[in-house]
Length: 257
Image 1 (cartoon, one colour):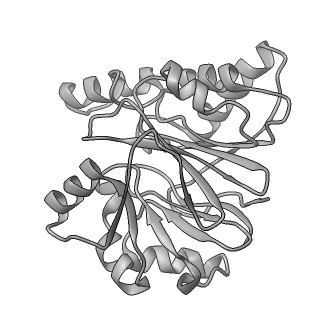
Image 2 (image 1 turned 135 degrees about the horizontal axis):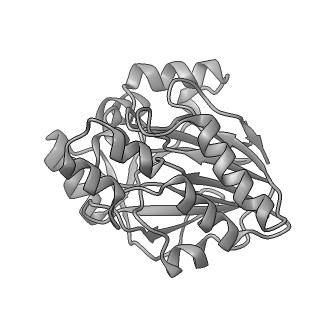
């Protein structure tokens, strides 16, 4: 597959596939190894063609299946130094790491990858832009607010995968502990539907082809709510782009480059 496929998105596990003409990688491995292999199979992607796993940060919903998957596929894990340390601390295992530096572009196969900082409550969390064959893909979740750096890095993307985690009113009304509510709503937590819409409007351009709304909370959001808030905000600015949901329990819409 030459394109992008969210295999799973949400607090129970995250994993994305990116494939170019010659290079295939996964981003995050937050499902079990078995589940990731199953979703690859359902998409007719041979797991043994995967060449690396890129990691955004060390929270369990992004690394749960990582050690076994990396061993089974025999591939390196690409992460920054602090995230690598966090993975070892969390899992007690040290995969075959290849270390990148946050803020420095690197090439892996024919993918040009730029990892950039996002405000989240981990050691050194990143989002990515990935360019190949004249296509630019922006992958940006797990952030409490959209910084000027984030907006700059997401300029001129052909495709975006953006966090629309929660509806603030649903967070406040939930039975979650006050500390957790504060974390989610804080500047190092997660983007709300409204914040997602504001970020999308800030980076919108006529060449933007599709946006996945990602990392939706199962308790404090709803697919129809996220789509409505973002689409209505775009409409108010007389902007339009195809939107879809990145699901937790199944793969999302595949994007073919």
